[in-house]
Image (cartoon, rainbow, N blue to C red; front, side, top):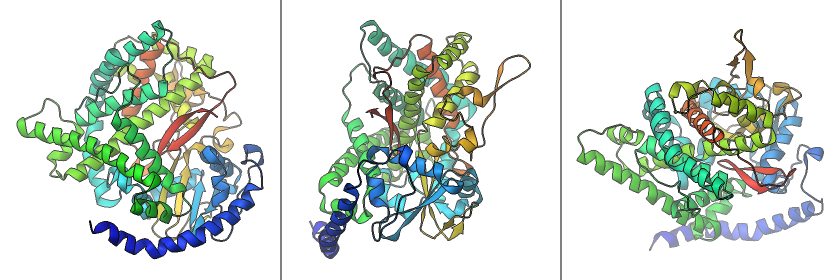
Length: 504
């Protein structure tokens, strides 16, 4: 009963200042920008002007749901594919698509570019101190324990047992029923449910049974998506003080966020409690999952392990489903590529044999190419610990944010050539003497879809195994046909990870 009055006492003077001054600033600049017509398109994009106090905030705000594309366009036209964005109140954020800068940030000066307070404090309500929202020893410990789940034995088990069961018992029957009844499916939702069940099984030894024929979403799923969206949109506020005041007063979107986060945390805590009970009752488990390893490592603090669970749900549920959603969309536009993939699938046995899935070379290349154009995590941001200078000469001040723009990098002519806009798996392949394809990977700093350096994604191989298994199982039996009218482009949006929005 005392906490709320104390919070109000602390923020009251600040809130009074904001309530008097910011509306005047907002009114002046919004009037100025509202008179300048429609949001910028790729044809007329320029590096935005910066104004006193508010920087280039309104230029970004006017882009609406094209924020990622607008920033990408600026990166493409900027010298050395790098520019400095002026945020409100004098804060700076560097955006880059330069591979040399990316290597500098993610490897050469790794210790100087951390998640930082700006990012971790914004996401702490939702992600806590999970692996994607922490630095230093806490991050190292989580990565070390999690790494045991990504060896060859675990990958084989994942493909031949977990993914196969989810495909044969749930996904394929649902699609077969829909095909028989000429029913339209929300494929993005289906793939998210599929990926969610898989990550729960392999990481927590828990079957969520979320992929069903029912289109109704669970309370957890609704809360999870709302928590992600609101937490992500905090970064777009004029100042962090805006969402912090709303959170302290428990109003508006922050009230909804608090309720959503509570629901998500309760779901994750139940998984942790059930696993603790299971470990206590059984001397040894049939298989050791990642959650069991964390609980057996001496870190049994419920809140800490709950944060870990939520982070791995985020990693396993949203990234692969986003990649597959855009992959099938691209196949519908490029029937030649789809035909090549189907031919490769038909040469393999129908059983989900690890070695066969692993060697689907053309399919693997097509997935890489799809993620080049539509990366599951389109941008990633770090905070500079000290002053620095990037390889291209860009000055980075201590405390500045530095963002490498993965989406933009996949569209740079200097990297991918004049035909960068074409969906072309062959750019990842070369013919060998036998006439078969050989996969030729790209440098991870040129193609940082799975990050690079010490934070390189642990689940990269597992993600490819899952995606290739799904592609093989579906295209062996079905053709995925979008119901969107011909010529209509779907919009690429992101809340921590990418999603497909309806007709743009």
